[in-house]
Length: 170
Ligand SMILES: CC(C)(COP(=O)(O)OP(=O)(O)OC[C@H]1O[C@@H](n2cnc3c(N)ncnc32)[C@H](O)[C@@H]1OP(=O)(O)O)[C@@H](O)C(=O)NCCC(=O)NCCS
Image 1 (cartoon, protein in one colour):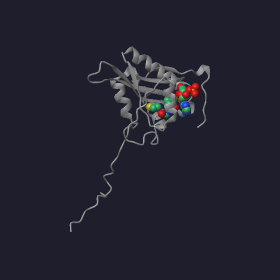
Image 2: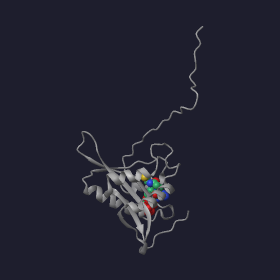
Image 3: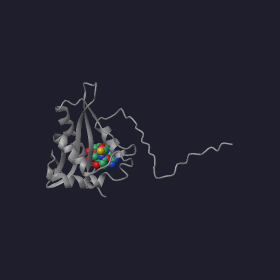
Image 4: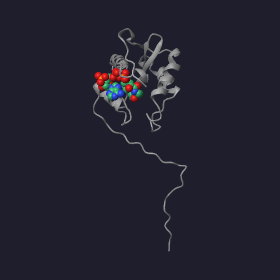
């Protein structure tokens, strides 16, 4: 899809998400978090992602709006680890409509969620994304993220017959 840069009059307004925004946020998510986005089932975009985060952390559920249209969203939460005095912010989902990506909407959403997390006492923000999502990796590096840690996913297909060799006793 072609990129449509936002003009200065179209600077998106970042505000807290409300219930009426759910369908539009859901559809933007469907557009950007495709099967290729998360081949492992660990991250699956569905309506419960929106409602669960909205119930737990309304202040960290943001949308970017141009006119009457939602063009992107950021959904986050905070995490307190056992035995750690630090409060962590977890930016769970960040999505911008494909046709206006690279128009600074993601950066604006991130700046606002970061400001809100800081206000809530967060000392470190964490994100996760697939290792081949170069756009997101560049994006987060641009926001100052580093200390990349790799994570491994494995799967076992239970519908396939076991290939274990049986050793015959002589
Ligand atoms: C990642 C995402 C949210 C970025 O939003 P955006 O509005 O397009 O980003 P911005 O315009 O604010 O970009 C800021 C910087 O990020 C980097 N970046 C953004 N999109 C990029 C792309 N497609 N390729 C390479 N770098 C990219 C660039 O460094 C860019 O700065 P520059 O324009 O000066 O080079 C958006 O691409 C998206 O929705 N992707 C699909 C969903 C996703 O992967 N979400 C992240 C994990 S939850």
